[in-house]
Image (cartoon, rainbow, N blue to C red):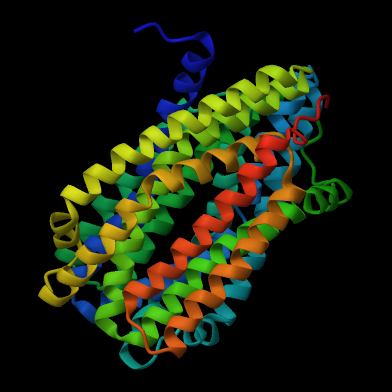
Length: 434
């Protein structure tokens, strides 16, 4: 079968990105698998702590998305020095925000976890994991900015090596610290922190080498960082809407019962792996569309967007089949509790059926982010969350089970996809130039 040059470039960028995105969730998957065998209560504590971390880090994903779009557009327009300057200030912003999050997260750990439904022993386990994880916040944000820069220059290979290497390091450290030294859930968090710092130093080294020929200043420019924050405002709203929807679902699940929230955590990991896998095409689209629009090639950007959607739906459908067939074995990886396995298997079916829809949603994310159309994305995602979050909360008010919570997630995904697709069809996102 002959592949068009357009599809070939998409796949050349997407395949390494897919490997990296599959490897990235292995941090939490490894934590879930190891901690899950310590017992149901530690697993439930991990679920709540992970939801809190998702809330915090999810708000900072603009460092990756915004950097990718900006660097791609600047390099497409031939503005290499401006791209280097943008990279430096993005890294400084990541460092300062990471330090602030580490301090604030440590101080606010208990009330935040209680807000998410943690009580008693569950709160104790969640608090240990969350507080120790905060030591990795600056490193995590540097990694986000670093991967954004490399994607923007169409390099998705080095992020793959970082993702694989740090995931393996995290797993080895966890197995040694927990099973050899019996250190408990805190060791799981510290293993992840060490891996995050190793990854951050890799990105700092690579970017410093890439920008050296352009002789840009390496000192922090607070005026430039304020401009970056202003531009990132719309992406922040988008991330808040997405993150808040899933955090709300976890909070409701925690109030239904310990088995329910443990099963929800396993199902969420299935959704997360699926979402990150399909996001590979979105990453390729971000880099290609940003570069094409920077070079003034709007028509080609539209064609790349259409092919991104087709490929993403195909990936989502394939993953749906895999998850549907492997629902019980997947659950058994994370828990030995028969009740948790049975319930999580049922929830994984929800995730599997959502695959094609998720493919369209994530493709549209990549297209519009690459185009710098964050303002419309923010409005669309806020509107979708305004529909999905009340639906999720209503399940608790009505005394319904965890399956209905995932019904609320379905509503959110349908609204999100519909609004973004309407924007894509309008063509108003095809703005050219640097």
